[in-house]
Length: 209
Image (cartoon, rainbow, N blue to C red; front, top):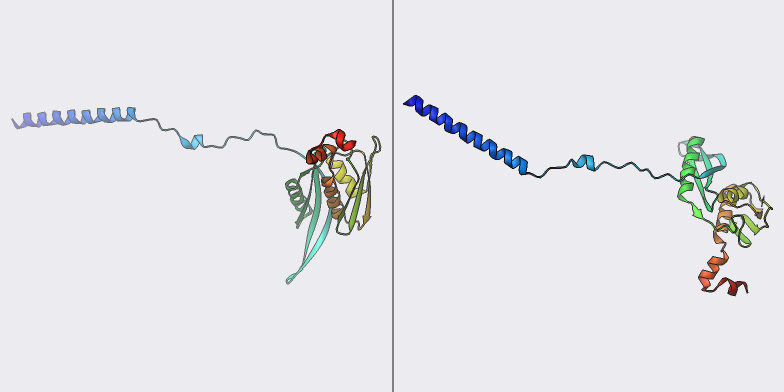
């Protein structure tokens, strides 16, 4: 009798275990599927084409900083960037090596890119004078085929901005960085006839007479 009771108890226990396993299986099948968020949150590759600009190294020179521990010799670079379609930027960089200074100046120039107006894809709308420190720059529009009549720093700015026919004159100090700044500020101050019409609320014929 005792053996029969033991066998019956084992059968009952096995049936209960099988029932619990079935319940667990049904619960697992009824659970919503969990997506792997790590795979979904992966950054998608950026397929956008990066904007590339033309570059001109305007000036490089050694600079010395006197400190308590002595003199520190470093290099300074001035770089112009542009797309020859109206975008131009000027940047300055300093580092212990010339290549690093040029790299920093390029990054600074790309942050300072501005849009300038070009008339007929070659010249400016009117004459403009601009001062930067002790440097004065005069820009005048020119007829087609004249070319760029300008000095080194002013010519570099005009070329990389996309101008083809301009007459310029530099007066005062000959600092390249001040000449470049004065040229960019002069280009930004020039207003086309369309901009003037929009500001005054008049038509082109009314302004030109």
